[in-house]
Image (cartoon, rainbow over all chains, first blue to last red; front, side, top):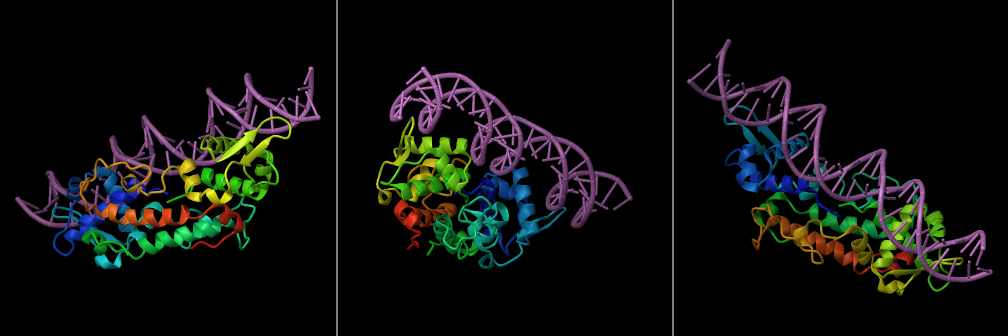
Amino acid sequence: MKLSKKSEYGLRALLELTLAHEKTTLQRHDIADRQHIPVEFLEQILLTLKRAGLISSRRGVNGGYVLIKQPHEITLGQVIRVLDGPLAPIGCVSKTAYQKCSDCPYANTPRCPVQQVMGTVRDAIAGILDHYSLADFAAGQPTG
Amino acid sequence: MKLSKKSEYGLRALLELTLAHEKTTLQRHDIADRQHIPVEFLEQILLTLKRAGLISSRRGVNGGYVLIKQPHEITLGQVIRVLDGPLAPIGCVSKTAYQKCSDCPYANTPRCPVQQVMGTVRDAIAGILDHYSLADFAAGQPTG
DNA sequence: CATGAAGTAAAGTGAGTTTATCAACAATAA
DNA sequence: TTATTGTTGATAAACTCACTTTACTTCATG
């Protein structure tokens, strides 16, 4: 049930990029300094976010990173899925990365008790995270 | 955001104990066989649950494990906290095991964006899991 | 076109966690 | 007493996390 450092840093990095959005580009050390993230680790994260099409970068003098979409178009759910994998607590209730459980005696049964609860939990988590955008995030918007 | 095998097995083991509740005791291999759990790993889990005061055991011929409380008195939240630790996605929003974040630039600020969302997520998860009992679980009760 | 600032990419690392397995021991009932 | 069952602790393979290192590639500017 835990958020990795990777996702936490990723979220905080995107927060800075959101604040800078359409004003300026940010270099890795800008982000690292402001959010106290180890630069080398941050690079990996930014690279992953770039491959996922959330940000773009320019090299050379005056290079840096920028958001590639509008802040309200990117949800925290998307970000966390990219960096940490599915939101679902267990593969058999994931909607974006379903995996049937091999060893469960109820596998493929319509009424697996574990699936029943965990499905609800997944929906609750995704319900929040998939409706909370970077714009909300940067604004410190209360959820709901 | 993931449930460990330990918790999954623990939940499935308690499911069997709930079904057997006030009828019979179950031995580790009964549980292991029915739920396809490696026996030795299961022992560890049962021991933890015992130390947590959820189940009790008797040794010797005709020994085994039994639930020590009524199924409706034990929630899935309790079980998962015992086996996997806090439900909160991040330490700084945990109610049962709060830990302040050291490196976050917003630490101790009333308005940390990460805390804001993750607090909501925590409440959603705990809201489900702390109100879902073993009795509901065994009945395949829909959540809500 | 050379230089150096900046991003890209992959591999490596140490610590810790997960998921078990094994063996020796302790208690109990028949 | 003996077979059955739970208790405990040690060990370990596999994997993950959180970085670090190293070796590029690319590009703006002088």
